[in-house]
Length: 142
Image (tube, rainbow, N blue to C red; front, side, top):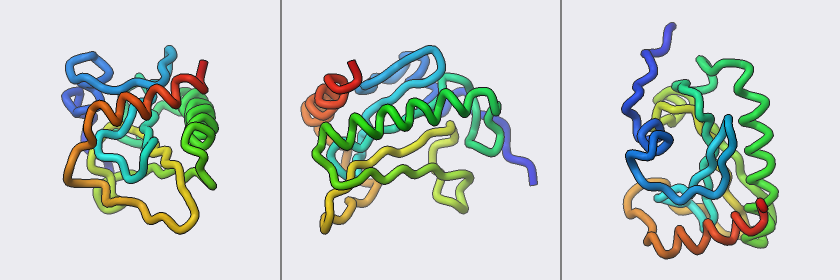
């Protein structure tokens, strides 16, 4: 089964082009990390490649080492910034697996023992909270 073509107008593509604002915590030539606007926990961050790909199934294999390196870097910072007991890292491919935005991305979510994740839908987080959470992560990525 072949995946549909990449849509250059998906929300992450627009964020990468600067058409939609985001709370960026990290950026290099190959990757960008942003705060999730509907976080499942404080500090929920998304890491995406700057190159276009729907998901991991059609990604350029040469982009993946850069991407996973950034995922690790962000996960270490997120865990420390939010004094988390662990970090949940998730990546979904196609609707049947839960993918809703069709630009490859990893979720990096700090976890605390005994605290459930919030649903990943519904109300957007207040911008001031996202900015403060981003600042905590940025401080550790310098």
